[in-house]
Image (tube, rainbow, N blue to C red):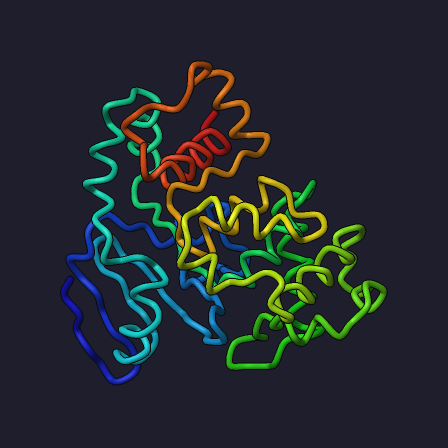
Length: 271
């Protein structure tokens, strides 16, 4: 990876297989928007970023220091996805998916934001998910350059479900509050989830009211970078039924979550 520093931005070249737009808008994160100039705007870990891709060149409108300690890891730029996709090419369906949608990376999101976002995602569509999250941040987050931060668990833990009425989140409001309280008081321990085998995280997260297997798997994959987590929604159920009735291919062992993301985006957008 080659990093070229300028006064107000940095340019990154030789970053391997990565597509900023696909990674930001493939259903794993809900706070990225592209403006009329092709610049992506997002807020993560309380920091606002503007970024743009022009072919094999990435521009991050931030300091080199912030890129190094935050954004390089957030976009998982040091993982060799080309090698992973080469493994996937042993399966005909995965080969189609990675050929059609090359460059998707798993974003290393903040665990609380991932958990809360996928609680909101239940029985919901992406535009509405984005709207609820935007209202959550505007109502309870802190104003920052470019928007509002994602409110942390202690901020929401002192509220009641009715306090979330402006979000128009429906039945999900009580689940958000329960999650905030259990994360804040340590009943659900993010540190242990991060540093324990995946089965522990599956059990720990499902202590939260309204968190089932799908939300737990999404949180483990996108919030804890447990890349063998395997979220199953309506699209993945179709994929498994139509393409893998006898089980997922061995070439995805250990990185099933990455394989799922390619298949999910390909199946949802191309078929």
